[in-house]
Amino acid sequence: MDEKPKVDLRAIEMLVLDVDGVLTDGRIITHADGSESKCFHVLDGHGIRLWQRAGLKVAWLSGRHSLATIRRAEELQVPYVLQDCHDKLPALQKLLEEAGVPAQKVAYVGDDLMDLPVIRYVGLGVAVANAVDEVRARADHVTARRGGEGAVREIIEHILKGAGRWQSLMERYEV
Image 1 (tube, one colour):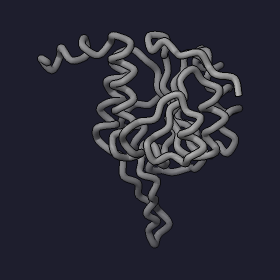
Image 2: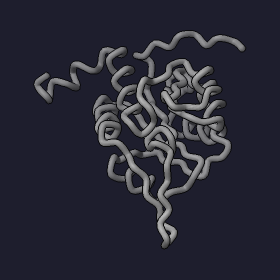
Image 3: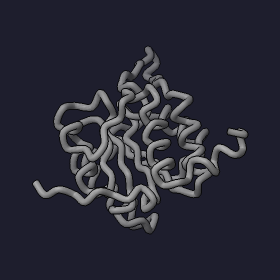
């Protein structure tokens, strides 16, 4: 397999996130009426807001359809939410064309086998700590935190700090 060149974190313009297993811990609670519940971590939500405040783009790309995902994306004002994407690479390619972002300027975070083609395609492919072995082995970066437990916030901080954007975002918090 050809090695990808190390990405300059300052070049990353867009963060694309898998949902189940990345923004959540992967568990889905199905209620008797057919509705479902998922747990999203508030640290990840605030991290997404920081990312947007830095003027960067964010998208969610999920293999499943879920009203809970739509609701959380609306709360965070995520402009691109693609669901029912069983073949994620063509969906991502269409998204990037629409958003006007080249693949090498994208970071993608995933956890399972269906994320592998995307992780290998983008500039920075990221696996959460509890991703399957094959994904962790092929990712450019593996988080210390598990999906649904602040892994998204961790990678956002990693990219923003590496790009020199973090400190200006902290000024509003008097840090």
